[in-house]
Amino acid sequence: MSKILQIFKIPDLRNKILTVAFLLLSFRALAALPIPGIDVLRLKEFFSSSQLFGFLNIFSGGALSNLSIVMLGVAPYITATIIMQLLTMIFPKLKAMYYEEGAIGRAKFNRYSRYLTVPLAALQAYGFLNLLISQNVMPALETFDLIRNVIVITAGSMILVWLGELITEQKIGNGISLIIFAGIVSGLPAMIYKAFQTYTPETLPTYIVFVVVAVLVVAGVVYINEGERKIPIAYAKRVRGMKMYGGATSYLPLKVNQAGVIPIIFAISILLFPQFFAQAVSIFSKDLSLKLNDWVNVFFNNQYLYSLIYFGLVVIFTYFYTAVTFDPKEISKNLQRAGGFIAGIRPGDSTSEFLSKIISRLTLSGAIFLGLIAILPNLTRMITGVAILTIGGTALLIVVSVALETIRQINSQLVMREYEEI
Image (cartoon, rainbow, N blue to C red; front, side, top):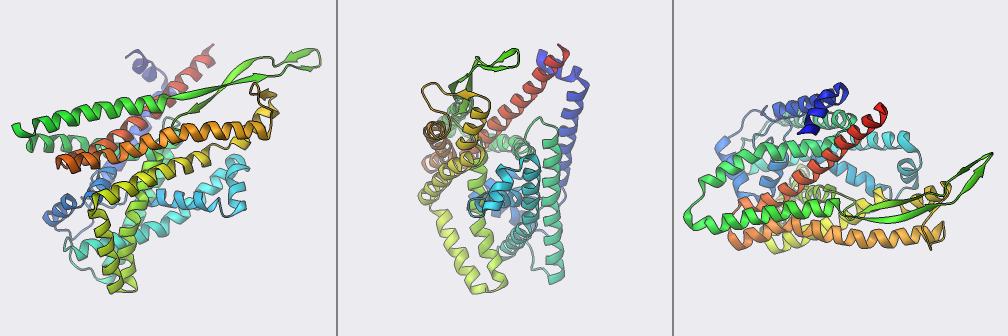
């Protein structure tokens, strides 16, 4: 309580929080603006029968089920980011831009990601509208109306990307993650209400199990997210002029889950892409589109296969994102420049290899944990048959992870201001 009061006593921090709140409210307002010509009853039936699209609707904060102008949320931008990160492994210039050119290189890299978001959003918008038309959720559209809706939905996604960047600039949380967070939280009251509506005395044990699982998920996420291994770092003594520097000891914190919640978001984006692609193919061939759509439906209806691939994608993306954000060679170089070293390990390549081994072992634990949490609701649904458990676990995972990261950044801002006052 004292920290909350302290936050609102600092004008700069208070203004940042109010700005973020206003931007998130703007997102919620946009999520309530629908595109025309929708059969609401058919739309609700479609989302209740589709696990994956119902899950995506949670991420969009209901914007998808309303078919609002921001129905795709930030999914196209996330897909574009994945593609750009993969391209850094193919093109050395992109890798140098991202890792070696500093803030300017990162800004340029992000700009290219935004450029790529536009065609991806248009492709996904067309695919999703075509899917809804094929399911009789909305009537067939004239070419002009279809193009208009695709442009509006694409513009909505780019507006959300812009809002996310404005939020990130406030330095109290990642903008894209907070938009997803706001979407999930906004859907919680409806989920709770639905749970009470479907409650019967016979389902009481199931609901008790759900509450226990939810508490364990929250505890597990906090434990893994806060877990870290501290590598002791010593600094050699150096004489410069009449003064001696160094001789101190510190540590390098390596988190168990370096990637946070990003791997799950990446995995969901990849799982959604085949569905959108199958519909987009209809531009060239209706028959091929129908065949692809049937294959995709067979895959999603097989809960065991779906869960296995979902788990694998989460594990792969955990390693991938950790490799992108944590470069042992760069860390080793920085330590060597600062006169630091790990006791018993030679500076340079030996330090880099040591850090690589440590981060690989830590990432394995974090990746398996994230994968199990991601598919746990699916497994619970297969056992209990209660749909609300399907979306509860991963939603909790993302909400808790984003909340912890936001609290951490707010605390760092408070500590920084305490130092400035001293």
